[in-house]
Image (cartoon, rainbow, N blue to C red; front, side, top):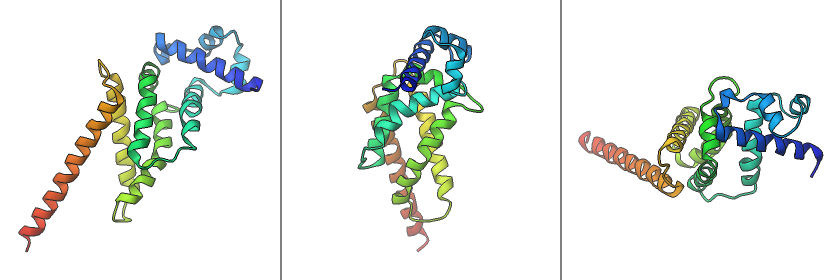
Amino acid sequence: MSDSIITKKALAMAMKALMEKMPFNKINVGHICDMCDLNRKSFYYHFKDKYDLVNWIYYTEFIETIQTQFYKDGWAFLDDICRYFYKNRVFYINAFQVSGQNSFQDYFRDILHPFVLNYLKEILTTDENPEFFTIFFTDAFIVAIERWLKETPCRPPDDFINLLKTSLGGLAKKIVYDMNEDNLTTI
């Protein structure tokens, strides 16, 4: 393993340990460097700020590992995301608290967006406004995941995924039923 990767991993472990104890907005680069006996220059050589470090952690711990996966459907992908967040929930509850420029939520949205778009291409029967649907479902999943992680106690990922499936399946059935009823009344 290269020295650069070793340094990045040390900074990441320090950040994760700090976020287990204190809110993200109270952590500064000095705290991170002190925890792993590195200087600020080393930090800034590898990351532009603490937000960049949080995003790097997510990318290297999750995104890199799934890039070689073949998912049979969007649910399998969402299941992997939920299992990862559940295992690291204190860190990500804290990460989701950050808002504004460089937030983890924005980074996660950018990562999730193409997966949702690709999945919706298989479902949508119209080419009209795919971006609207993609943004809608991406945001819905992000809000649902964030709220789920904050639950006390936090239900296991399997339970959460089943609730999502049940609610979306029930909604889809109701929409189809209503559409069929509307078609019958116009005949």
